Image (cartoon, rainbow, N blue to C red; front, side):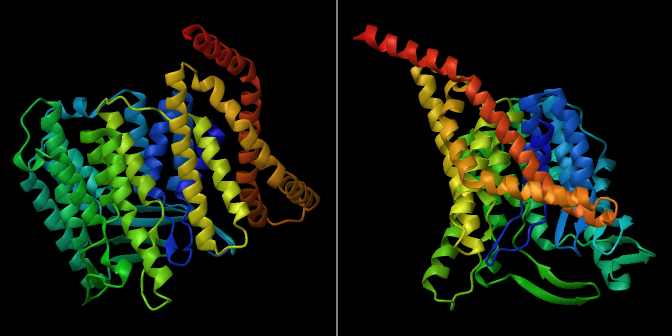
Length: 486
């Protein structure tokens, strides 16, 4: 379980480089992953999440002159710990809505969100470890929480105006940051593209409060999916197609003013859909989130380089779906907790697709891997539903069906991977006394995912083999029932 937490949270906290017109930004998945781990594995997962979140998400590790950057996501770390804590203690949104309204001074916390700092901890030529704090990504969750707790909007609006004014003033007067040796202290600007999503977040929180308390919704929220679709619209960025809605501003450190493209509006849209419409609503939002990427692919395919278009974040649909699942879970809807078997299958399928598409470009490799993983996840859910109708236990027969997949994976990449690991470990052991500490750490980090992934795959193979007798008994029971029914 600890290995799974390191793999999933670590992969989501990596700041991946661009793949041509496509990007990978999975930081918004950290909170739903943490909640799922606690829901799936209980108390041990909570301890692992706290450790991995502090070390791998909050702290920032930059390797090989910022070629690989892991962590440095204070807002994602705070959301992950909050979501995991709520799931662990069974605290739903209804219990939060039933609490007394907070003091009006609580709105002043918005003034602290643009504050940021960077504290260096360790630095060499190739490895840097620091503690950065950028919390502006908490704006939408805090606004939703304020609405859920019943805080009136004028106090929030006043605090927001104060934060924007202070950020612009400091940007003009001092470029918004101060250098104290290697330490950095600054105050950012809440750009206009955040204003409407923040208002939507407060309104959604207030609508959830009224719904959980049995009160009649206000007129705009009588059709809640409209709010989810509005969040999706606020997430869209015309700059993806070469039409950015931005204006230059010569105000010190503030060079541009952006009015569209709020990345945080996509998790908000998925969360709203999950709360009010369950996973079906979240799936609708996730499907619509794929439309800009699909349009960009068509334009790039047919435009012969003459059309400016970007695929954007390829993790958009999983982000919307994951936050929809989290929203549905926090309001007590009956949702399926995905098992690790399905997760392992998606990882293996994604890896196989990556290996088989070796001759293609990096963008196509990435796209095929993600598409194959999504197809595996959907196929796993359909198989589980079909098995339940037949009276088969998924714990008994799905792992057995995955055995051929694991065998193919081992046959294709196992020998080469094992040889590479042996060579790398032998070289590390031979040079243990002479190798520099930063180079040793860098090479160890490169080995860690392969070692953990191999250990997890081996464990799943052993579990599938152990499930063979039970699967045989289940199939025999279903066959006998079918014969009797004739």
